Length: 255
Image (cartoon, rainbow, N blue to C red; front, side):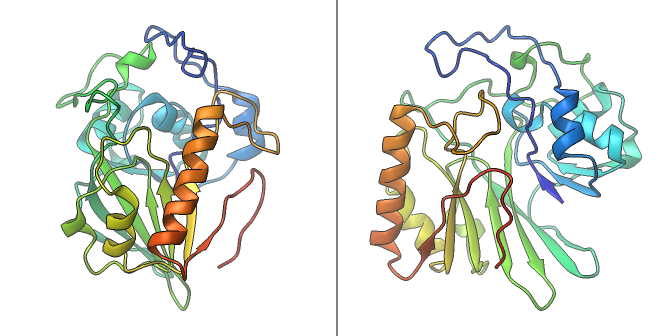
């Protein structure tokens, strides 16, 4: 199972102050060979390039089923994936895979300092094949909770906002919590920890410079390092019994 697998990690200028929405979409086949040679399920939180760019190619190579919004469905068709390999979901579904279930959670995308977001919009029909990063809109946002039989429940979010009512009752053991891109969302960490019933383990995600190679230690932009430290401190204050695990690449963690 893969969640938002983005391995190509090419330069768009996002981390250098020269962001170019016309950056062409490319796939690093070598990175996919090394890190994504097998998959049966791909969960997509939203369809910005840094979440969806590699999904169609991984699905094509592995035969994995892709779950995501209706936008993800239509974009998958635009890349030539068969409709039978694409499963549109919207939140509320509880999907049975035998030894685990996947609960789909309606969610929200994070806001920037202007209370907006990059490339908003949805695709309500099959578009032309995307060519630039601007051709991959947010397309609504989901989160997922995977519950393993006789094992933990793990919550995944790909953007730093949420609707508290949609998280009621999930109570995951492990929560993958996205780093805030701004302070536009009020009381982000305290509300999130309370809504998730104070998970035993909190794993910050989406905090590294994802336009650099997958080498340890992960590269972190200076302003993101400050935000990461603030996120860790806020989790420890709001949920002092939670263990915070900041992950590294190529590393397996067992819960």
